[in-house]
Image (cartoon, rainbow, N blue to C red; front, side):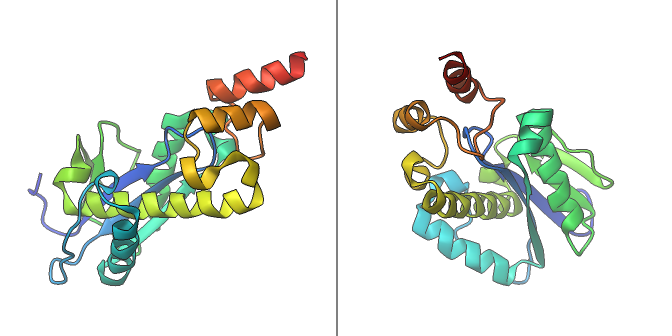
Amino acid sequence: MWDTPGLLAGVDEAGRGPLAGPVVAAAVILDELNPIEGLADSKKLTSARRERLYDEIRAKALCCVVAEASVEEIDAMNILQATLLAMRRAVEGLRLKPAKVLVDGNQLPRLSVLAESVVKGDALVPAISAASILAKVHRDRWCLDYDREFPQYGFAAHKGYGTEVHLAALRAHGACPQHRRSFAPVAQVMHAGSAS
């Protein structure tokens, strides 16, 4: 995995599972001379810790990019393809060209540089951990912003996931502009609404 001399970029995503909002990917090239303590899979960290690490990663990384694929893109191409698109946008946005890209999971976006997928990479590779933190914090902030616009859905609490509270809000209020129409729970509510 460490056989390529040169810059190494880590890539991860956040927001594949939720029923609403963009899917977010981040690409990070860390500075070996400026290490960051406490990098880990973003899901294992408290939100306060993620916020602190987010700022530290942005300050210390050689370069990093956060990119999105929109709800419209998710619905048009499916969540996997939209996730790979967001990953590609993140890598292509890096101002330094990595010699190799390590991507969390078992799927690779189409890239013009050498790339390898790493299962559980967000726990194993610091650059992927950093990418997972950037992507997660960016998406959580999006949910907080959107919650202010559409408070009836509770995005600040459930972050768009299909919780009972969220599904109840969908049934009560219908879908908002940021709901993923191609996801079954949203489609069912919309179909029920159009049938009645």
